[in-house]
Amino acid sequence: MLLTLATTHQPATDLGFLLYKNPAGVQSFELPFGKVHVFYPDAREELCRVALLLDVDPVRLVRGGGRGEGALDQYVNDRPYVASSFLSVAIAQVFGTALSGKSRERPELAKTAIPLELSISCVDCGGGEEVLKRVFEPLGYELQIDRHELDEAFPEWGQSKYYSLTLRAVTTVHDILTHAYVLIPVLDNEKHYWVGEDEVNKLLRHGEGWLPNHPHREFIVDRYLQRKRRLTRLALERLTEDEVLDPDATEEKNAHEEEAVERPLSLNERRLGSVLSVLKKASARRIIDLGCGEGRLLERLLAEKDFSELVGMDVSHRALELAGARLRYEQMSERQKERLKLIQGSLTYRDKRMTGYDAATCIEVIEHLDPPRLSAFERVIFEFARPNTVILTTPNVEYNVNFESLPAGKLRHRDHRFEWTRAEFQGWAHEVCARYKYSVQFISIGDEDPEHGPPTQMGVFTV
Ligand code: SAH
Image (tube, rainbow, N blue to C red):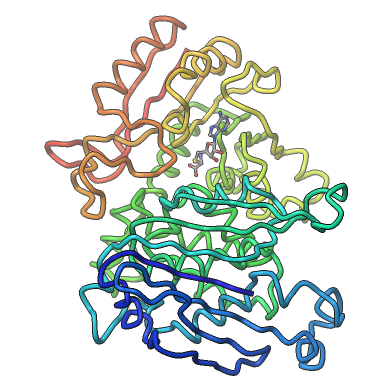
């Protein structure tokens, strides 16, 4: 198992200081599952490349208490060759200081983005190239992916599931090692050690600053935690707790740490509370939540006896799975199941299953749609589904200046296609009303800024 890291930032041999490994010789370390060797195939002023060669001992894996079943218990397996969590452990052991972003000899350089190239000789990626791109491209890497044949001597056998992967970016050594450390086990999908709650902490710690905004964070968390539903949910909840989306929750949390009893409501809680009270006022009984995500609103609605039928719809299967887990759908009695349905579908296609409800909610969804699809969305909701009440919320982009962590001009979430000012949202809403014969009322959610308005804007459309 081979990983190399190279830079052309001059003097390139400073890489040795960042990694605490002298370019002059070979160093070897014992790990519980094998040996790791660090050496420099190139150590010149203009190019320096370090190699980490991990020699996993398959016999020791078996004798050292494998997991009881599966490939790890056989002497012949791909573990010695494929980048896996063993490699992550080796990175942490051998480049631990660099992984934590520190350097005694070159502290400034450790924080500087420099041209870096990280190669992994062999990754086993079940989902193929698409998964490699999904995971690394949003982090700004240029990828080179070479797929290996099953056997060069027998080309007719076709391709294997193994790839060589190279990541290139101008970034810090800390970042590139962190991304490799977290994402290698995500690709491999098989962990050699037991996944427990401790892993959640590890993931959150190493994911700080990039994972919360990664558009495929759910996929990453899910795979990293090896599809352990409970842990995945825990991690996602903690990841989204501090999301920029919810800045006043974080701010207030810090300010009122001691007032835990009367903890102020987060923006998300206020949003859900407002939706709930509008639904009650409208005397809605049958409700469809469009773009229901992980089912946070449905969770609140299920607790209310007044609502006789609830449907959550989302385009994402994964979101629906998480919603199912949150709402404990599988554990429900048949009667309870009659009250709740989770269905997969898109808001930009006319769909009979959306008709016949008293109210539709569309919470923080519209900004995820491509602008050219907006008119289709309008027709689907206001012309075809046509419930008596439509509740729609979306961020107010004017408020973004209040988010310290958000660079000017940036949207709150990477997957947002747009964010509207109050005038833009209201202009759009009035046009919709004129076209489809609805009327609209606007409600502010969250603490209003005197100049920039509330963080979230809500439109309540009624026939
Ligand atoms: N309403 C939820 C989730 C908001 S995130 C909440 O407030 O917590 C946006 C959700 O919209 C995601 O779950 C996403 O999968 C879904 N979505 C995006 N485009 C969609 C489309 N065209 N049709 C249906 N759902 C969509």
